[in-house]
Image (cartoon, rainbow, N blue to C red; front, side, top):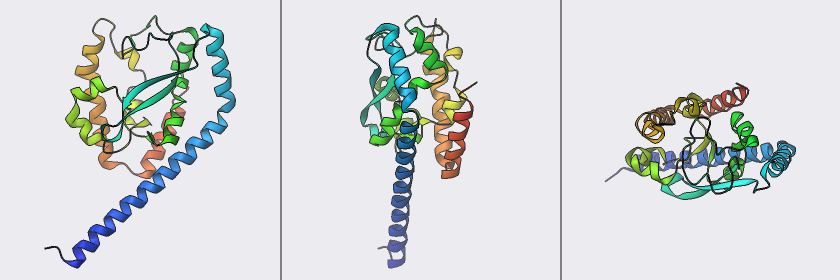
Length: 215
């Protein structure tokens, strides 16, 4: 039977983790809200540009797997004609499905901005492994069981390392290359970062993400 000191230590550790989670959630929410307010004019310009481009919907939503394998709807600015994005989960180099405005949005990662809403909703964090579709999560379920103990995020070390993923993938063997090479490398980076992450390291990731938007 555990002693009173051991029980107290466990209780203290649990309370510390709980407080850390609350602080992180508050920080992410405030940052997401501030960013949404700051980028509101940009959101409006992007919405108008998408509408003028082909007249379709402004946003694109897709099911992704989140914390503890709970699915949620991830939001992006639409960069392909409506209905075509669901045909293939991956985007080939020079994919003809991408619209004119979509290429510009993807180049500067502006299509990802609506995920700030996902952060506000609590589906995602600012920093965390990128949420994946069910198909690929099931292929690497044991690894995702570890990674998805925390909420996925908008950016992380793997996102930075594979910022130009579309330049790496070959159109001829797109999915095979992603499953055999790219995704395992991303998961390895995510697990390594999960073991050493701190609040300051998350801030560093956010800073690097912002500074690389113009590359």
